[in-house]
Image (tube, rainbow, N blue to C red; front, side, top):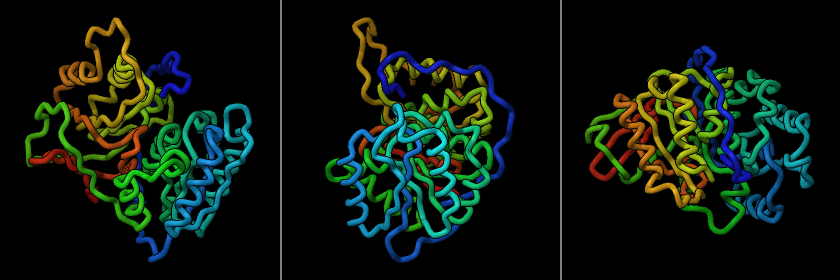
Length: 337
């Protein structure tokens, strides 16, 4: 995730062997009551890009019947929404709330990597155990991976407030997935086959723990206690403003760290806002996909997952068990208990 559109993130060296505890499901624990959801909005990463977009997003969710409480300072601190201490305090205050149904982030950007060793993870896990859905993507991947690695608690890769609700009409698919989650359901995700190699025969299924998020953050977690140690999982990835050669470099980091070979499937979402170079000579994302299919013949590598820095994004439970199946009309990803 290259916000400045400059060089890629430095890569770490080796994983810390810390098995993931049994996952704590936040999707099947409790049905939401028949009313709008009570949503706490936090800004744990980057500062506002647009206050009007933030205010429009609040109004849009309120119009849908949801009750919002928000802690998002209007004035930034450096490039962040607030100081490290204030952003930590935001997370802890919200984690202690007993009268909310969900937590959303204003936006991603950068900032959570500064906080990981100071977040009270058992406190957040206790919030998840009460049925609170923690929702976000992009920089929030760092939080989601750490929560899963340190406690086994699940969270949800999904929309951010300003980016997904602050512009024009929200994407219909994203909104349906979001509303289903707030009603206490994990909706199935279906998409058409793209650059398919028949890695999973039609009618057969691959099942495992779903985890991942933004590839830059997944790669940056290697060598730290904040990378979940998942065997037989379904790893999903996406990124923005990263050329395919950088995607390949980060995937090599996961390959050499032994992460990729331990998965049953690698699901590729959106890889957007990159520009080809004159000397690419045909090198693109499909080149990377074909290369890793040759390197990892035992791992199903599937393209086209509707998730990432794109309007049409699914809701995915990070730390939930899923079944991936290929049918006549494409792929289906559904919760498996």
